[in-house]
Length: 295
Image 1: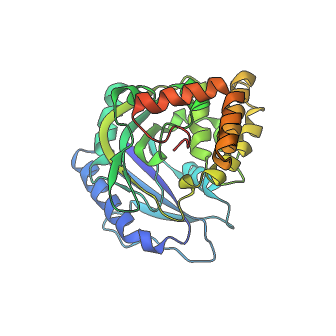
Image 2: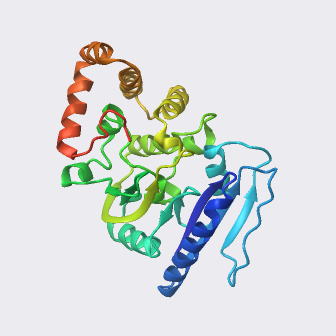
């Protein structure tokens, strides 16, 4: 079997040494058990020439967008070039363990899921690390649509996921977002609405680093990106209007909550009492402090 790792590149020279080293190690571990790796770097800063490094086996290639088109467009461009049965969308500044792909491939083959989701290690600005999924309850929500609609995204990054290529919805590849930040949330929601099978692999195979350039840490930017795809969901025949309304209500409430002072937080929470209670329960039962920030 073959895995295709797709990575949008945007002026990311400082990340390339660590990225290429990680891909080389994963290529070697996959080869040792009879599988293949294909790495596709999508250059979204076309004014800067990007060339694939010298390799003994040509498993890493570069494609270049005609102009700066954004993360979603770049991921879909890479997907169109991919020849693997399984896909990982990995960001340029994130790292996976040297045998992450072997372990995820073994797990998804056993589970027969459409998407295998590993735990993630969150590297904070002070160098400390936290696990994303910290207890059994949170792990059980990895494929729960209601949680994604009422609480928010439950996968910190697509870099912790291995996805069957033929499970990726056509709606996601044909409706390209103009605002960066939430195309992965868009993908998970579409997969869940199509009843795709999510399976959790209980091992931290991926490290997510918070940086100044990391859009997922900027909730305002992410919210604007979510509003972008909410408009598109109205044209999706398998995503219900009720779910679209719930998603819009949750994003609007949390956006208002974060922007408000104490009185404003109380007022908007009373106006959205059901969501407020659900998020309090989520925060308590998962043992995470991210209940009101969706990240």
